[in-house]
Image (cartoon, rainbow, N blue to C red):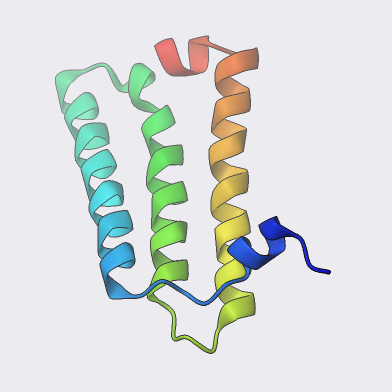
Length: 99
């Protein structure tokens, strides 16, 4: 009996609408990072790069064709790993986020 996590992570990609939302989030985080670089507080914006990568990986996973379940699952796991790493860095090294 497969677990719920396996069913969710390795399910069919959700399609174009979910991918557009993920890519829009990635674009928004990219814009915030560029703004922090322009404003001169680049040290406090490094965590945004993790958010960009995580949301872009999730967007790529959702934009794949329906028959690419394994590839989508691997990309989703990579996105989860990136975002959990960012969360762990926040907990164990708060100066990474705060600056």
